[in-house]
Amino acid sequence: MTMTTLGDMNIYVAAPGTAPTAAIIVIPEIFGLNAGIRQKCDSWAAKGYLAVALDIFWRFAPGVELNPDVEAELNEAFGYFQQYDADKGVLDIETVIKAIRHGLAGHGPVAKVGCVGFCLGGRLAYMAAARTDIDGSVGYYGVMIDQMLGESHAIAHPLMLHIPTADHFVGPEAQAAIHAGLDDHPKVTLHDYVGLDHGFAAEMGNRRDEAGAVLADGRTEAFFKANLG
Image (cartoon, rainbow, N blue to C red; front, side, top):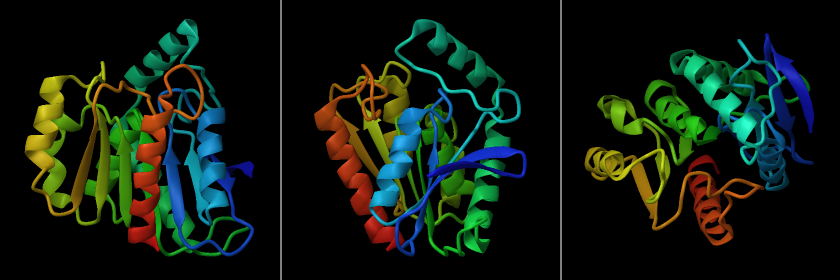
């Protein structure tokens, strides 16, 4: 488990003890590459995957780590969200995909690559499914997906979205639009989590709902086993 760089971008790499079965890119929330995201990488490595998290704010706030339970840091994160260019973010993800397939420094090439993203990262997971050749994508409580449904025709590999129905950032109308736009898509699976709010699957902190997190993470693990091997 180590922090390193890919070009000018910070990444965190967690490797299993044996040759990985596949690789998973972990896309952070608006709180940066913090302890919770690194813990998610470590968990995937323990399951046999090469796990790589990228510093999505590297262009203007490299190395930032924020705690959503601290109001000042939450507000700081929203400021970074306003500055963030998601189109460039997808290009960053594509850079990581290519690096993994060609062999990250110190690691051999890994052919199968998936991604899992949270919050803003959930939106990026959707965008990666539509714009890259990633082998499988999972988004947790992705914001603004309802505004990007016009790209759904380009989704060629499996995508799973976890939707908490009480998400105060993704309201009922947005959720209804997501279902209307994606329920019949042959590559997309949607799961609703009744009564849960944004951030319910965080590794730590006040937002976590244990039962919901365990259910969603179990579905994600099964999804990657089925689609990445």
